Image (cartoon, rainbow, N blue to C red; front, side):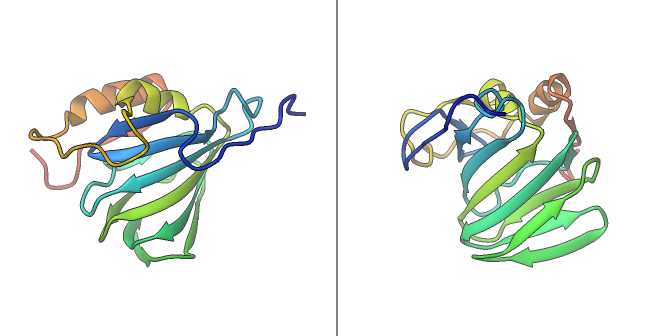
Length: 158
């Protein structure tokens, strides 16, 4: 049983900038005794993560905006109110087709540590300034391995 109640309001808690996006920890794995990690993500059009799979499940709920989700060999479009539950070991990636705001739940918890290592502490709970250079996907792949995540380069990249 979780020992502490977690209460987090808009703009509170740890937040990270990565891939020109904002990743906010709503409940960390540590705060939930390892049961889950809950993240709120604000991601600009075209800035989704590379293909990946990880231990446990991932549930994505779209609050605002639209996205295209690639789950194994299937493609799904979603908008506000859409929910996607992705089983453990499933390859997936998503492409925001507009700026999208999501709530993502990972079970078990702990994936927030990947975002803390791969991203940089956010200066504010807003999107970061747009980067002038492409993301270092090889760096993300290496960090992902340390957190049990298998990540591949983006399709069509060299």
